[in-house]
Image (cartoon, rainbow, N blue to C red; front, side, top):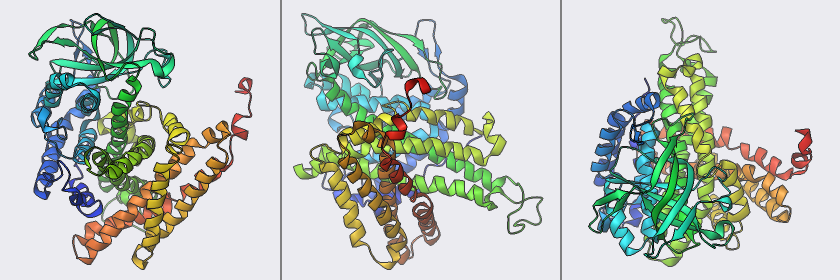
Length: 594
């Protein structure tokens, strides 16, 4: 059976030594995140994930969700009890404002805990994860009455939340959306339409489900400019906060899926359901993007989480499984064979995953910290710079971390050989579960188009220029001998990113050429960002070694970092070469030729 141990020590190292989060103790919530509280929270979350959630991962995969006789959905055995422990522990509202029942702690800490939860049981983690996104949207755009009515029970976990965008005829192209909203005399709206692929759309974990639904008001402009967002609860809510009659929203079907079987993915039917406008009419897409950007960062975390748990299991197997002899001679002459770990190709796979995981965790934490600064900093310039970082890095994290997360789950499965294909080892479930991360919340190709088509030029390229300036400045300041093994490869890759950026700018009036290089550009930027993280990790690790702190563990980090910059980072040259090809050979073949 699979194992999982939350990487608490790595998280603490990133928090204290690399990102030095204590610098922000003047911000709301950060002063409360003392070293003692930080460590206690991470260890308690780790215990819950390891002892309660992880054992249910296989249960959820085998049992899945089923329809009940009354049209509801029953989650797998043990999920209800686990959800209650998760909610009662305050993990859902960990970073939500205290005025609505949250703890007000930094979002970057919640992001770490979400990684642990997704590694342990991704299908389960989606239930509270979606609630956190819905809470963020209501908190930022809801009226005072909506916040008072919906946030406390959602933050406590008594109610959960969803996001309803996709319809049978439209996914990414929301301009094709048909769900209608008819305004009533009392100011409410009647919502009619069908939504598909709705994660946690119906379940038995909470007493109410608050759906956030995109719909089109009568006579609204065509396309995305005519979309509005509505709060549509499963049960209507009385003025005193108690539940009233069932709303006209039902689960029409459960999807049969490749993975995440423990999460209910639903077809949702709205038959004149009562809804309340959140924000302004025809501005729903702006409100929804608050939730989607949080969700996209969360999906990137899922990619990292599955890469981490797959890696841990592959390492354990490689140490125990005996197969063949080491190329240089037997390492265990008294045994019939050597452990898999002696073989260079097995080490290549494991080092590739580890080299990604540690840098990806740093990148996620760095970006989640920027999200905190964008919401909590006093200085408007700091808030703006942090928001710019979020806008630029969200598509990179969502796409790169899920592409690599899936590839790493496959690579970890490969370590097992044929045993990785057998369900009892759990590796094939990691592969199946990881696959969805590349598809939902905007496919990874769409993320790449968003990056090169919108984010690079946004506000005259302000976010991009800030990122390039930060990395370039770091390279210039860290020319010392100790850092050269890390900074020199970063400088080369950084040059590739600059060249690729200039090429895209030069061909800005050739949309097919730009689009053809979008995925390669995103990967190139992502690799540079990961290498930048490895440089910062290495800098902190070298300082730790100088203080003679944890030498064995810290040296292992430096080894993993050198592997990344020496063996993985050179991929940037390949991405640059592809970008420079443009679209000629890509678009040349006529449709009939396929």
